[in-house]
Image 1: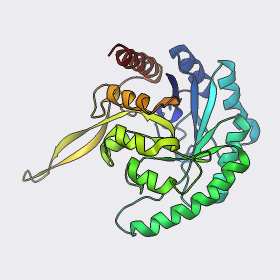
Image 2: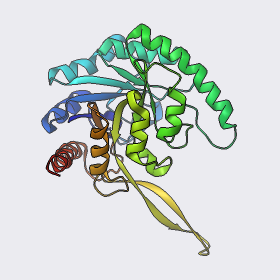
Image 3: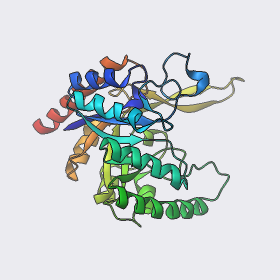
Image 4: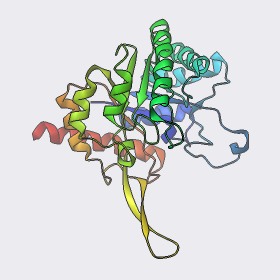
Length: 288
């Protein structure tokens, strides 16, 4: 089992600190977050999506970007991916991320997929995404870097089935799927093995986190709503031991990348616990 870390989950660590902590935990790959730190966030305490110290700056120089490769190389780790927050249709931005990925030796990037909020018809958004991915596929072939579509709530690809519908137009050598069961707690749950069997050669990477639901009472006391939230890896709705078995059943040999947003542990301890837990679940499978 190969493990990686998406640095969105380690906002307090500098790249060099993250690489050492990952190596100490037995993690082999790094998925570098590709996003600038907002100017008004520089004095804030570290956070996942604002003051994240472990992020490549899209406006940085090649020398700035190579710092991340050097941090990984120093500890014998692989720079597995560059992970941006692209908008569907932003071909210029997508090419820039491809260039960064190629520079540091990463094998894939996350591409932009339309969000879904009931304001635009799904079919229009789907057609837009297909047009964009045709251009992404050309870039992927040119740069030797795969573009992956993530199963993600509040987008047109929340499930394995809807994601497969989109990527099935394309060559799986160039366009793949980032499978995220934690996101599917919020929206898009399907039987894991069935979805993985459907994805077949498009399955490119897996993110590991967990989520659950909390009943939130209404202010007027007359009703309540259920709200999704992030929880520790071993405490949520995703039965990770089963998911690992299902991934193994379809021959998955790629990385399992931690993306824990629960905030339960500080970054170094979170990485250690992730590696220990995944090893335990993997061994339980072997002994089953």
